[in-house]
Length: 533
Image (tube, rainbow, N blue to C red):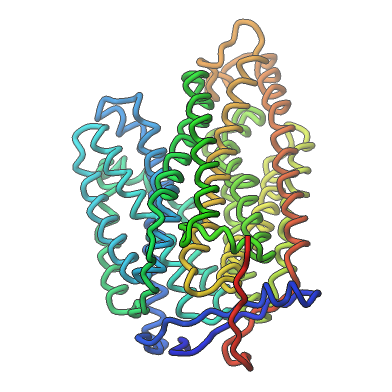
């Protein structure tokens, strides 16, 4: 494995027109004065450490879900149960752009190591929490450090690989998320049943210590960037306020816990986010580099990242409920459809990462992937209720394959199209739009299902008492009515998500033609011209 040292590295991302080619073709100044070439064994240790840390951060999104009821019962705070998950997700989302900027200034190694230590300490504290308030507090800290693990893992890969090598290794790191979706709920349930819920958090510690030891040895001391003359404190505050109130607003709206309260939160969020964009456009050294979106490659890939959050991540949580109610299957069987989806995503993510590194081509995978996602979701909208479950499993597996084909690849392309001095910031932005899109779309889908079911239920049935078990014990007429309601509600949801992927097709087509190059293929050094907003 070769690491640039005191040289210029670049990714050739060619386009059909000369002006676009000059904008897209991007080389970054390597900070690598203090960077040593990594031996093969050290690089393997590095990848193992980054993958383990990323997996721990992703796993804590999913492993807690099956233990929530037990935790809430033992700590006696059912009303705060959802905040064990929401607090973690919100904190990890809010900190992304801030940590991205810190990674560029302080160096990704420092941010990664501190994040891992904080994550382990927070995991230890979560297991010892004596009430729900303290548990939520420690989960927020856990989420903040999780953002550093996820983001710095991708940033470190970008700093120690050439553009051609990057998709392969980002795909390996990116495999942590779908793997956590598959393993998390089962692992969380088993740990809770046999060891107690505290071990859901404590199990992170021994694994994390191993990752920390590997990181200490393997992560190179990458040179820091130039400290900014002006810290974008105002932008950071505006962004945090806007995002916090956005999540609160959509969460309250989905839970129907107060229309006026939700509306007020959304208004505050809108004002704060508008202020954030104004601040970032005028800031001398902004936290989020909005000027880079004049680059068509970066703009298109960021849009594709948002499509993944809106189009697939948002619906995955509701698929089991849909099949339990519409197909009258058990909870265990209903989980087969999201499992098929995630398996398709995992396999295609690794395969396309390998193919992109081998060929240097990337645009074709985004076009094929978005087409597959859109077609699959349109088919889901028109599947008749009651088909054998293997039919929707194949269709959603098709959607997963399409999504995985560009899930990690677009991160590699964006990193290669931006100056290396802003790798952390642009990587954070791509991850941020995905998480925000997923959060908002999830809340909208949840609210649509909740209101729709309550409005369409026949007299004598209430949404509060409507459980899969109750439906399966009801008369055939009621079962048919409930199945029809869920089928009716999910048709427009699947169509809307298919349309989101159709927009993604447009973004993929607008992505300039190009080829990721290996450092050995670089014949001359180029520095990208400054981009204007």
